[in-house]
Amino acid sequence: MWDAIWTGARLATMTTGGAPYGAIGTADDPAAIAVAGDRIAWTGRVSELPGAPETLAHAVHDAGGRWITPGLIDAHTHLVYGGDRAHEFELRLNGASYEEIARAGGGIRSTVTATRAATEEELVASADRRLAALCAEGVTVVEVKSGYGLDLDNELKMLRAARRLEERRPVTVRTTLLAAHAVPPEYQGRPDAYIDEVCHRILPAAAEAGLADAVDAFCEGIGFTPAQTERVFQAASRHGLPVKLHAEQLSDLGGAALAARFGALSADHLEYLSEDGVKAMAEAGTVAMLLPGAFYCLRETKLPPIDALRRYGVPIAVSTDCNPGTSPISSLLTVLNMACVLFRLTPEEALAGATRNAARALGLQESHGTLEPGKAADFALWDIDRPAELSYRIGPNPCAGVVKAGRPVA
Ligand SMILES: [Zn+2]
Image (cartoon, rainbow, N blue to C red):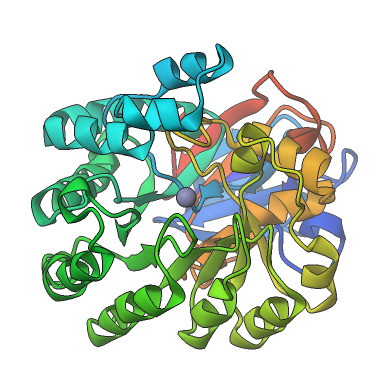
């Protein structure tokens, strides 16, 4: 006996090689999905079930013709932080320059100050409000980065806060150490000394405490050089942690190719990615993580090389990049719309970017991201007539239910 079955459904399994969206079922010939424990046990058409649903599962749910997709995965967020930057947003729109804002203690430095001042409990509580919005739209896995503590105690505090979000919501949290996000004020003008601190103290401590699932860095003119980034990646390798990279957002430093050389899970942003970078990513199997929310908020004009990514078969993921400075967005569906409108992804590519390819960007492709027997029973039910509606509308939330680890949670 299965634990539960949902009948009367249309499945967007997001598997490849079959119908668009990996779709199973029609309005006249609906599909079903069964779960056993926390895993998917069966998917197919109701007409193919080996018996009446009541004889096969302890609980039978009627999906009422709704579409079911894999639980959405937001695979690049800075969800945990102190304070916000609404005041700066207003100052800037009233004509203040970046320099004036920076002199007034604004920018990332203000978030570092607020994050250091916050208790772990306060960080959990404020991140939980943003997480609630994500989960209401069918998100069941979220990645959360550190990177606003920028010292040993505060980076670990951020990672612990991120992990504790799992106690608050039916969501799987994957944590990423992003200590190499910016040079902290006490290391001003001494970035290499700070990278020493990251490689020899912060990263080993996070690894030993089991608080980081991956390591990230910000490779950019206003961040760290490729040589500094490489030192962080070498330290990550020594501790057996996979890497990913904020790369080619504002210029082309060859960061994506560097990341690919370390077998990175993903290279993220990529507006300035070169064709050589695309090739390197394709060969390494590194996911291209697109973040249209930051592109939108920064009013960027240089588009990531979508056609080249398609041509070389690089898997494309899409995430909110939820952060207080450049992407204060806690709606993955809105970001899917941005990916279509701004980057011209197809609705199917956008949805794959928040399911199958987002799972790959977290190294979870064996267990998450598609609806297939054996995978985690994480899925969302939607009041829509076709999957394209998930990226078509802005505003209404069509999420009609969420199942996490086999249990209905919303
Ligand atoms: Zn980011």
